Picture 1 (spheres, rainbow, N blue to C red):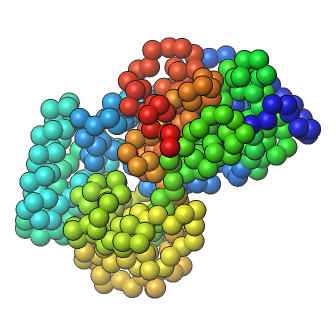
Picture 2: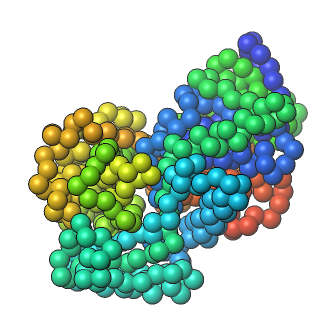
Picture 3: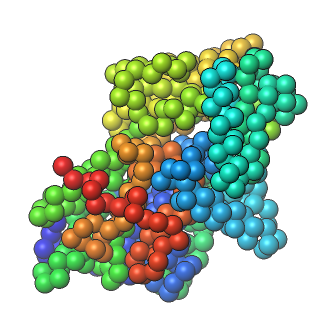
Length: 432
């Protein structure tokens, strides 16, 4: 952490500097631009949507969340804010489907055994008591909603009709455009392909005064927000390396694959779907799983069925989870396992050879920012009150982005947060 700036190409001043141009960083910037008169700079080592955001499935779901968990209120608030955004787009005479890829498909959380069905019935009751519309569907009931799905007579699903999905790429494009509308007013600037390399602190106050990037010094009058996804932990270590603050942000990358089959016409899915095993593997197991999911001990590899038809009519299948460092190479064995797993639920897929779909096959690989306790970090760094972290959402970054942005905004401006921020605090979670 530099005490004095090194020679930059240029020195610029903003109220808020956001490091990270994924969905969290961009929505944080958007919140300050729309909710205040503050100026914002967004910095990234690459370009928007280059990390987990661009590789996601786009679920805005409550089906797999638990009302008693620390994430519940933030997830509910975020979902409400996404719904309000979709409504506002519609009120302006535009179609949220065309702008965001917004689809209120509802979600199906699927089980195939009597044990899984019992759990789903309990979940439906719990979600209903929490105020959500939720119902249990037997395998017979499911047939009319999803004719292509086959789960056996014992199976069933929790159906949450108000769950939604969006296109991450379309949504980021829309948010970028919103943000850039403030450029001509002198309130917004982007610095891409320009990684942050150090923080500059005031010699008297000790507060962070600027972010040194590879090309610029960006002075901040209000706050610096680190929202660098899976890179947040290593970045914070680098930025604080010369300080006396002993902070260990335990965010680490959790690799995921999605298989996209474009122009798929064998069947269409009416809802987003996820098997129960996906919920089990959101938190990495400390011992081998006993579920029917595929688990490799070395990287805690798990593969669970998720499936949806996106706004462009493509079949999107997932998903895998593994710890493989920052490796983003496509692993064909995992793609084949995703296809095989999906075939256990959709018999029509078993009649198709994945190799024959090579012209229509696309693979998305992203690094989910994993936190060991399953909760993101959102809040100021002790000892540096104007340095905040917003990271560690794993596969829920898109879903919880708007609520996270609102929370960061309220923290910086000294407002009471709409959702209790205590579960996401840095204190007690980021020290050796």
